Length: 446
Image 1 (tube, rainbow, N blue to C red):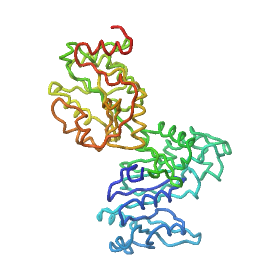
Image 2: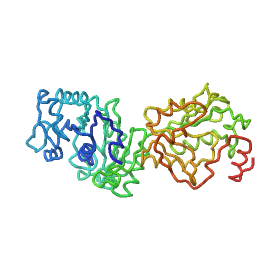
Image 3: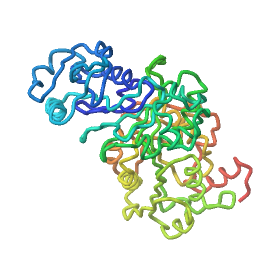
């Protein structure tokens, strides 16, 4: 996918690029995708030779040098200070940078800023004085080159290897491991250094140029999901057929709908037995095993018993006092409970304890690769559960009424169907005989 979709960048928003492993290339690649004009600058230094990547280059030294008319005279417009003796362009700072930010915001223009240097190394550890990230930016994208993995911790591959060693404990000249990169990126003295409160934190694991590096990138991303708002894996130098980004990791909430009164079944379906556990506990444990977080359980009828059945599990329980008014009331309550940090949510039903964690994992992987509004399983032409919704669908979910759920949105948005072979995921328990049928399909006796 392209960079705009991967980071969900809106018109008029600003982005700062820091780290190493393709920072400048990524900034100009994003600029190429954005609606023109797009404004670029730096807060530290930029190689003089890199100014040729812009369509127009203005050298400014004071706020008065920046005029709104200059922002419309090209496609990719670069603003920097003058060139120094070292063939590097000085960055903008203070009132000059603040004026550029203000003008871009007022004119609804995207502003892309390079916030530190890395001397073209694959990965870096920041010095005390960097990165230089101005307040008020919408996104901060930290780059790290996966090509550093397996290489010795020396200046050839790492900018400031001594600081890298201090943060991670890895001795100089030793090969860099996945665990070392994770430790660097989750450190407040490393990858998280200097990111302003309120700015979205995005990690771009670049240089995923083969399957081995992509797999290692996935290991890093799974570990750091939640630390960063989004984690991209891809390659700027070797983009795939659909763009620079192979997959996007982000936090996906789980919502279990368990509020119904089971009128037709005439006994609480949430508490039916599945291999010695109540249905609701089995569904919750499966969701947690698959990595959904936070996990939200919407209760209603039999609230106390359902809560007891979930004892000891890291779940958020929300009582729906209006459960008798239909499933839509639980859907709305669930979507409103999803954290702002989550840009997707997967809805599970309490009467499907047979769903394997692998199904959820594959739905998550599918969403990471395609980022469609809805992702769902399909068995021999039949739609199945669970349904995974991107944040794009949240407002529509919040408007559902009556005894209806998320399936009502399937005709409103594009759906990415995941082929699934095991038809038993289509079974649920609504009326007498369904429970026995489900048990029989798994050779279980009631």
